[in-house]
Length: 243
Image (tube, rainbow, N blue to C red; front, top):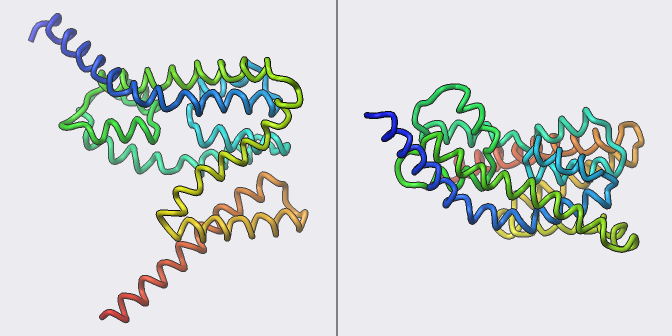
């Protein structure tokens, strides 16, 4: 196969990725704008807001980071919490690796950065295998939308009255509730997990022994372990009963 033919094919795959990512880019627009608005109310600068989106590119983790920054949490707690929130990426990466054509390690390292819930869904549901060119197109347009709209959101927030900017902090908690409600409707386990985590976090906070950031980290881990242990025992009892 000639070099020109290979280039045309790669370009075609790249454009297919761009087309596949348009819906993601549109979906990211309001969420990224809100992130920029909340970053301004949290006290971040425009540079810090854009750099966070450039370097992190993880919506849920960035929103949680804002809430932790708002209460004065340290860097170690924020990094650890981000790791816990994004630990699902190990599973997504393992799943996607079976669908992606073999390629050089540096290409895998590049497109692994752009792996999000949305890009994973589009790539994994595409018919047939996918290659690096397709993933680069898919993730580039998604990434660009998130970063650019984060900056635009901050600029819009800077033009709002001071009272409105200060009240935007409440929107952060409202967004978390909005993200939680659909999951509560689908699985009762999520309700238990949220409830146990809230109780544990309140106890940790009331004790005053550990900081707010570590209280969130510990309550999240303990709640996950306790709820999973409960369901494991419950499933075991169901098997014995039905057996």
